[in-house]
Image (cartoon, rainbow, N blue to C red; front, side):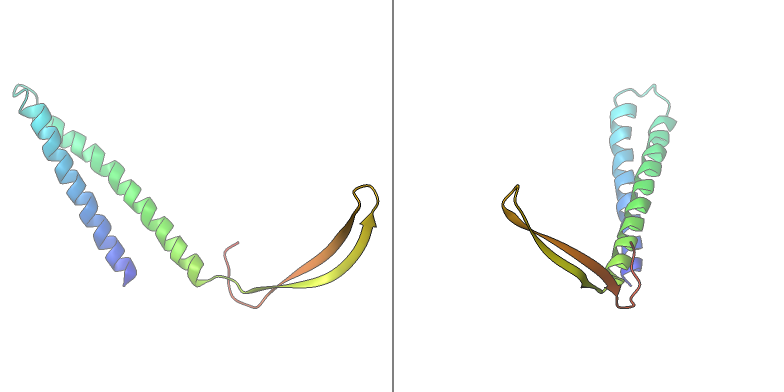
Length: 111
């Protein structure tokens, strides 16, 4: 249901922005200079619609992948495999070397 709502909202926003853009361009180009060709505002609006609809499709795809990645987060457990301690005389501190092993509990994940 989220995807259907996302699709309808994207269609509505793109159509509304295109209509507003058409009337702004029509008022600026055609009403200021009536000798201009009438197709210019419509052509510019089609270019605007193409760009905005492409942007809406990209944002919808990103949102869909984000929702899928949240739903399929892995449950990873870190297991210590090797732990050694050593005092370093040069820096006068203890150094720890830790070996880790990642265990996935079986859920799918995007890495």
